[in-house]
Length: 204
Image (cartoon, rainbow, N blue to C red; front, side):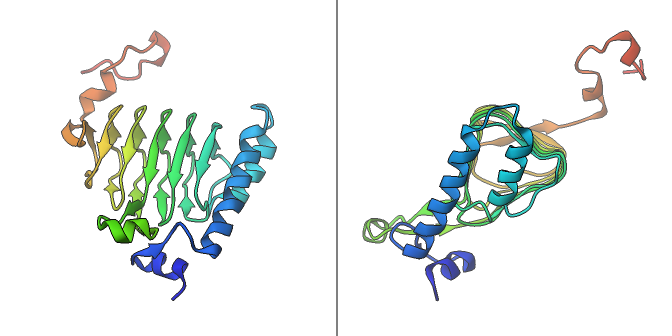
């Protein structure tokens, strides 16, 4: 098996010294560098480059630079995807986002686990485990999502959280390690004040 095939199968693989993977990373990093040099108003050029970087995306995808990832082809985003400044995606394994995912600044999604054994780690061996995110998920600022995590739909991950385990749908989860705080309910529709013309339902 090639080192890329080992990574895709979930085995330990040489992430650091394998020439094929090194070439793929440099290609992606060059594209990310080019993307990050564009003017904010050059939205068409940004979209064209993102289509070269990402494995799949919709036309309404928006990622504010700077943005960095390892391979790019393992990142797949759904409709109305938005990532704020300084998103980092270490995609040795697939990172999959559903529709209407919002990501605040300085968030990290990492599929990479270095070997715990020192000899394996010093030999450059890693394992990559996929990250899967459902629809309508909002990540607060400075969230880190670790390898192998699945996050359900309609969930909010609070700022500064470190997500080490799966999080179910329809909840607010916060902390390090990230834990479910409570369910999201109908009452949350009335949490923030609305302008008079936007009030469609005055009941609480």
